[in-house]
View 1 (tube, rainbow, N blue to C red):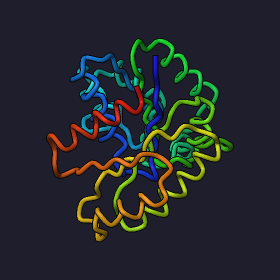
View 2 (cartoon, one colour; view 1 turned 90 degrees about the vertical axis):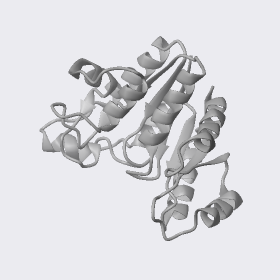
View 3 (cartoon, one colour; view 1 turned 135 degrees about the horizontal axis):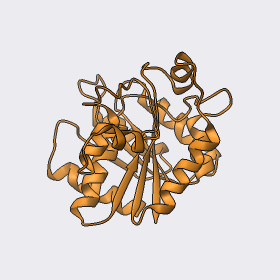
View 4 (cartoon, rainbow, N blue to C red; view 1 turned 120 degrees about the horizontal axis):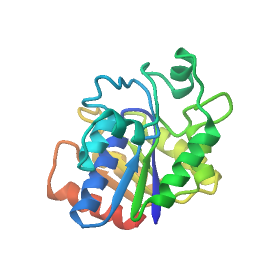
Length: 225
């Protein structure tokens, strides 16, 4: 059994794109793979098409029936807010210890590799006293940090890298998922990132599917296997 936690510098940076791509890579290699998106906001169980859980289930080759969605994302909320706010809007609260146990049990039951996709950025609050980083630290799984190539991404990357390493977590890779129509040249972002990164830097070009990205996903799979 192996597991990895896929986090990000913020929301909409490509965590689900990376997680789904890794799932497909492991499946193509004939290796057992499973995935979770334990917490998700901005999600409607009655209309799941296009949501992060639905994308992951599709990559796993599974249907998006309510039972499957509940199994992969048990903490789901309608409002597109941080988990603590989205839960509060529904008169609910996230049980942090229950979330930790859920992920640990899933990892123990997985024959191959388990990918756990986080929600939002690494410091997003889950309740009054815990963040995504706290969940990562309690689980202790190797981390993959996903970011974009937008203006300001470098500061976000280095801040996220700093807090991850300060918690003594194993940062296996930093994945730059190219931001479409960014005002910053991707090559310049990668050049600067190389001077400060404390983990291997991989780059995915969102508008170029095919062999280039496939090779990156294979490399990433090797880093977490």
